[in-house]
Image (cartoon, rainbow, N blue to C red; front, side, top):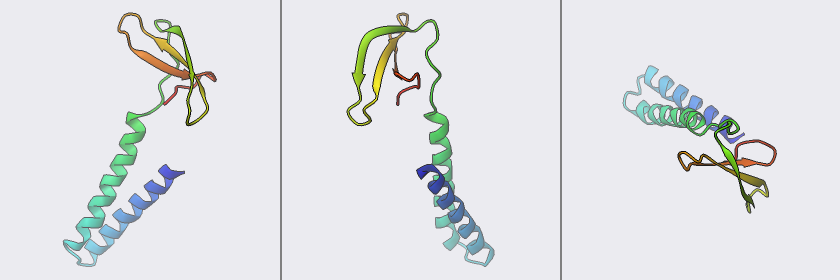
Length: 98
């Protein structure tokens, strides 16, 4: 919901910047246009950078650790890769935990 709202605001800001520039606003259009582009890129980048990871594959081993997230109430299992020592958190429904 918040992502969609931010995308709408970004598109509206870009449209307003283009409109003001087309009407001869010159530098006055730069603020809205620049902020709209930065907001749009930020929302798109966030979605790409922090996308959910797939469930751990065979190299991951389930540890005996399990905890309940105090904010969401989700029960989370901890997996680890013995080669790299990296940890991976998966809720008990099988979805990656973030």
